Image 1 (cartoon, rainbow, N blue to C red):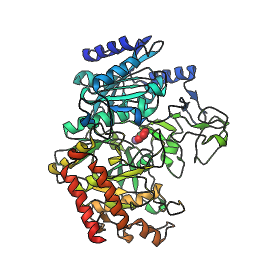
Image 2 (cartoon, rainbow, N blue to C red; image 1 turned 60 degrees about the vertical axis):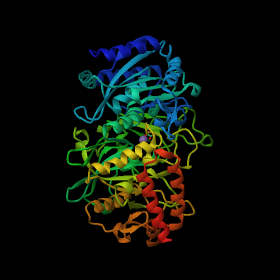
Image 3 (cartoon, helix red, strand yellow; image 1 turned 180 degrees about the horizontal axis):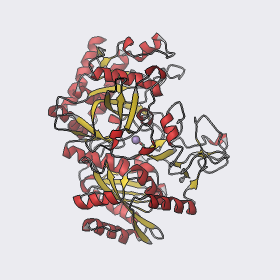
Image 4 (cartoon, rainbow, N blue to C red; image 1 turned 135 degrees about the vertical axis):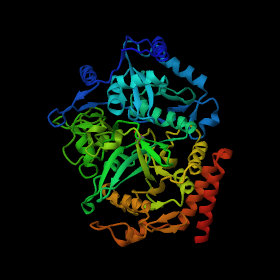
Length: 583
Ligand code: OXD
Ligand code: MN
């Protein structure tokens, strides 16, 4: 396979000239090709087959121990003007960035195969889908891209028809963190990534294209590329509402996306459209419609069990690539909180020794096709996407943020999203458990200045009166002894139900300075072991603490200076004033 599109052929030739691979291979996306790539990796030791009786088609990859997460400090947005990248991104001038990274790419593929992967983000027939080509020297990337995107022949046909595509160049290089960079050139629709084989750094269709480059494109084209799961929530009458939720990395998006309703909620169902990324477009009727640009899941493994996420637990028992989990004596994958089996070998490949930390890396992952998911929505492949009733923001916060509240209107909702803060997780290299601002859960992923991004969000209220309602949830409140106040997981449906009832104007709630909160009786707690006092605590607003929070939000917003939209400043001032009146 080669291509009739001269711009693509010329780019492939020039990359080969720079990186000097032994051979070039164009991926066609077929099953035969996938099986062959997997078999080759098993031969070379990059992959190890797991127990094929209990985990058919499953394999294990152990990465270099220094290469197990995203690297925000080595990730750059390279726009001509530094202000366009904004204080939320690391910036390098495009020429300097190309020069620096091309020097690392020179000869980087000697002795290796260079794979050319044409891919489509979004259903192949969708007008909202966008195209890309990733060039990589990693067979592991090829196999993961096959599970995560629509890749191969049909994507190439569409690329040749349209002529435009995002150029992504990746090499694992020598895996030296000193020579690791993830660089984005949104003005050129291109990405260059070297020195890491980890998902978020190496599967360029995901964070690099579908969020950083796409968010930049979305701004000029009038849509939104967001770090959101998408679900259909079906009630016992068979009516379905679609909801999109933005939570920071490793805060339970995959669990919510595949939620199984509790016993008390017979007749309810959750249908998965996506677990990580949503592209939102306004349709002719002024409704926001969502597609999931991805076709698979790259989920955090530890904590996955029959209680927390039965759909994911079942799904990853076949045709799954595991990265950095432990294994049992029987060669089954093992991870913390799996609730069965015992580890024999840890994620570094050493005999398991509890004094060396967790057996599976806290950011160990599964990669699996969305078609393996028992709750996969029939509309996940619909070219026109699904209409969104509610947008939900959330973070991991021990204190302060109530279980759920609703923004007063769209513009206030933009403030709620811009104020999201969360404790950091193992998805990025760095300290874990520190509260940081993560607006719209996009801190690591927005491809341009957050101030301009908020202006873009605000502009939607000028375009439609039929926008989704905006909410905020917090599943992670704790008491003084560190115990979670809310049971979470499947029980979160009780909160989603209130959200749907607000959208249907069936739940009243009551107004507070931070937005609408449920009246205590409006959250169904039947069958739950939770006291009235705990519910009161989960559903209350501590005025003094919120005044402090709004001071900190104000400081954060002002750090964006003159570019901060006046309308957002106004929303902030309104909340501050209402808190003052209530104090
Ligand atoms: C992810 C992340 O992998 O957010 O989805 O880090
Ligand atoms: Mn994510």
